[in-house]
Length: 131
Length: 444
Image 1: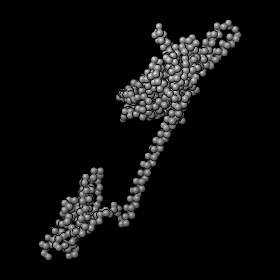
Image 2: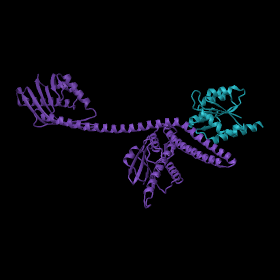
Image 3: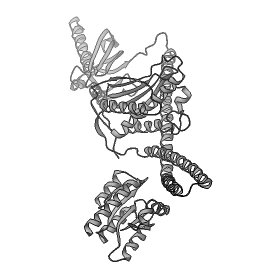
Image 4: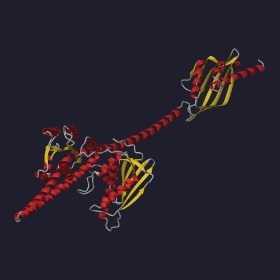
């Protein structure tokens, strides 16, 4: 199962790869990274239908913001789940994200346990629907 | 001339004079004027502009007088009348003194007046040809009004001095307000700066915490692998080193977490005005959060025994506040009080010291007063002045961020209130919050 993580901080890739080292090594999940909203959209458009099933995106990024990316993904690839990860845990961002169809809203610093739960839950869901 | 004729003439004269006086004193209708004065009558009133040279001008003067006396009660107390016939009975002079009293809605004006009136017998008819009214200057033995002038300038000087004192007082007040504003401005600017820095630091701090946590997990995994190897000196050495690395990583994580909590406190500053004013049972909120602070302290590493006294005014009821922010204020003040009292228990020798926290709320004249008082070591004036400055702390080492009271100050200001401190060394420290009871704070 393929996940896309979008964040302008490049170290996020290393962090996620190490945090999910076992799951990635075992091939349970695959992770791809984009460092801007634009890059994320290009990546998603490359494969038809897109291989990525779930996008986790930061909100505060230069250029396209995470919320703009959310709108774009929801209109162009409605089957892909999108969750937000933001340092700004304010209600305004939260409501905006939820209204635009975000699945979950994670705040930074990321609680990797709850993130892992979300990913595992998603994998189970896709397995049972595939069975 | 017969005696009878003399009497006739005299009574006619008196009648004309009396009519004239009654017209100018507004007792008779103004139309009677023309019957008793010559068309080119000349007269002087008591003010500089009252110079009359015709009947028409005289009429205007009286009309003005009538207008000025609207809404007022006019009295003229006539006394001391003297009369003298001149020119073999063809001219007469009347000299009269009286007292004018004008009752206005906002006070009474009273002054003496002297009037001399000259009448001429023209074609057998007595007519007023001239009159002169004057008001004496309120001064005696003062022909040239010198004393009067001195008195008046002295009065003026006194008034100027009074006004100057008033102005000086206002200037002082303005200066005090300005100082207060500068302090608030400084605190707000520092708060914004702190919040700006906090945002910048937050992300790198997250990486520090996340990577240290991750590395710690890896070290544990490595240890597991090493334990699977045949054990010898080298593996022991590796394990000892890994244990050290693990300790170091824990330290990195621990201090990173500490920095993160400072950053979070700093971010509280930028939250000003967010949230919604909610009608809140203030006493209930106070009780709840004092209790929470107390149990938090009891569960901490250094609990102390504290007696908590409440004196809550139940007439306060529901008050619009930002509940989340306000509960933070209560928590901060209680935490501060507990820390202060803990310091005192540390130095108190024979254990007779009983820490006590007193929480008071009062509703008075549309203002709410909330007092949080501890019987701890008290604070010096030097410290008191800096207590609301961001990053100012008296707590040792890693215990305080120096932001608690500065945030508290911000929150109270946001509620359009004020917070002040009273303290006596070794006796008490008292935080006093003053709030409008109908809070008009705008939400942003």
